[in-house]
Image (tube, rainbow, N blue to C red; front, side):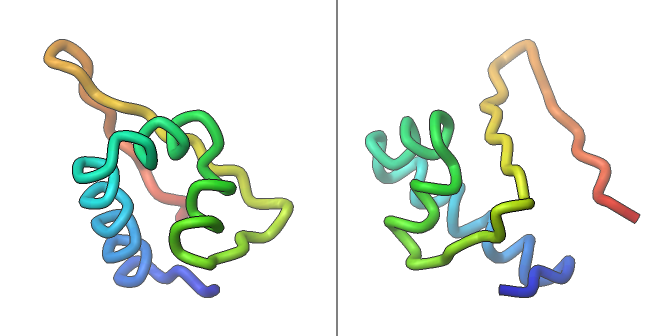
Length: 68
């Protein structure tokens, strides 16, 4: 799976939408993102790719600067 900026944004939108609709998926996505993605979307991410999922709250906002 090749994630250019457009594909990555679409994929992130899919993950966020599913997480809001399915609390079990959301919990698994936070605890074990690769497994959650593999089970729900059938996408196997490369072993050398690390994914971190964080949830904002009313007092914490995250800004992610993409790899250049």
